[in-house]
Length: 454
Image (cartoon, rainbow, N blue to C red; front, side):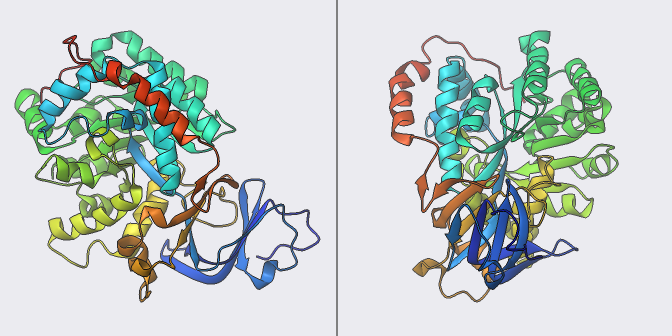
């Protein structure tokens, strides 16, 4: 579709680029010498560069030598935890939680959360991430940051059963108050932490509240094999079966990690009445030396979308979804013993449409097409490490890096142009965090917000 020159000026025209598109079977393709017309935050047309030559626009970007992709989505993270990046290194999971992270998190103030979230958003914008699903505490602060910096987010206020009913009530209150916040860029979820820190009564209550209010649920589940084996030994059911019996799987649910999903869990997930998705963050699994990874192939075979994620930077050291895309492809090849799985085009599908569906935005983002929100990133492939290009999909997944993202756009608004951030003052945020670090990382008090015992 080519807009008429007689129309009112477009908000933005991106021209002379190669555009990643999806056909009606959701297969990945590329259109060369293409142009994207954006009006009022929405993609109006994907056409040719020649087709927009006479079209008026408030802003134009010449994207010669670049590829336009749907903005990447970080389907599970804890953005404020960038403040803890590198603090707990080379530790098994239990020691990581109990000896470092959960004691330090007992020091968190809303100011810490806001500063961490702001730095995280800067990192993600520079890496071509336009939307993230966040699961943390003091989420009012994160919502403010999202509104300020222009990103899109699915936000949930996390809680443990040890907090009492007030934790669950705060999660609901946050979700209802911020649903549709920031001109609709914020969507919300209920966010129980996990089946090992939230009891069946709270999970069942959460499921009822999700159904009553039309909210999704975002939680950790079957993160690793130890959690699944411990649940079976103590309760006779897997974490996924706990979610079924408490009604969580009756809702739309986003499950973080799932490397401990067992074969017996697959039919449970397949028959789940709600929309079920899993977020995979392979870098952290490698770092913790977990023996398994997310069973992407098995999940896809039963129709469960798998989105890409980083987890928090305290465990992953990075919020680079680009790296997650490459690692997902490589780790899946290794775990399946099959170089034909996961292909570069399949990895791009996970990074785009499947990630959009995982966070409940499958009808509005995840592809560059008329009617979709204009969440777009431009990737510069002129560097020596991306030349020559024999297979564009492979170049994007295995050769390009997040540093090749030149421009990041959300809802038609440019958040980064030519690698320059336009909505976040990074030096100011870093200075604020540095002032707080001595008090934040203190563990002499002997407290922790929770115990990890799986």
